[in-house]
Length: 315
Image 1 (cartoon, rainbow, N blue to C red):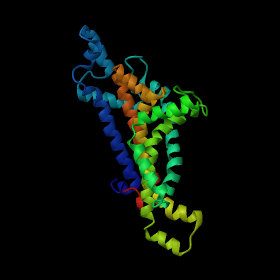
Image 2: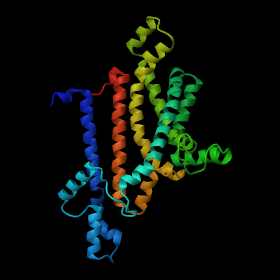
Image 3: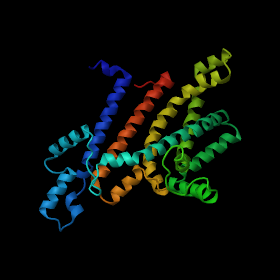
Image 4: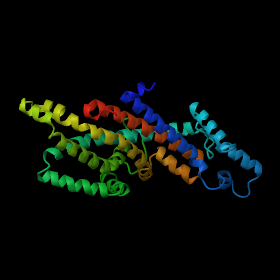
């Protein structure tokens, strides 16, 4: 068994499972770390003992801590994430209704980030000593320093209020009509992600140009797209892809703010409503499922990393 862990992919998979386990423990403790009795907090001082017992059972906090954890793991293994104490609807059903909106927002944001950051980073690296390189440095710093909610309001004013190129708020379901509602929220997140990713790619390309295999390719007379892709861009993409996996987690966190600004019925908006309504099981379920999505995206980014650049193979 130990010799199997020497394989880099299997070792990284074990690490991903370990992170997922820690995430599960954190989600389990989320309700238990609340000071006082959650059932008493929800029902108030007028609640009877029978009401408190029923609510503790609904929240899964009856019995010893070990019994609660065992029951929680068993329920997760069979796909039972609990029941919302507000709507009395299974949490998994609620997430399934709202998750497509958040996934579409994440996918649109990542695709837009790649489409904007790759050419911008390449040009910034090749023209780093020109006026464009200096303007890129200043513009990237300004965009990263601007709060995302302020960028969102400015973009709404420019593209929704002034030009009517996007809706002010709301969501139109169904592809490709939903892109009309999603491109502006995705662009808002990109005001932060694109400059950072382009800077990472720029730095990576500059470092790659000093490698010996690049000099050897130039000596052999390699030119055109083959040189730029195989010897310059592809080896430089590894840290960019690693950052993109991290940005997937950033998009999930930003989605809470973005979905509020643009009134998108996604998981982020549902999480805010659950916190406001003190729907602890729903908060617990969304935190665990969102974290699980981030772990999966990060693992896939590591796999792509190793394929793009042999120097960046998973260790």
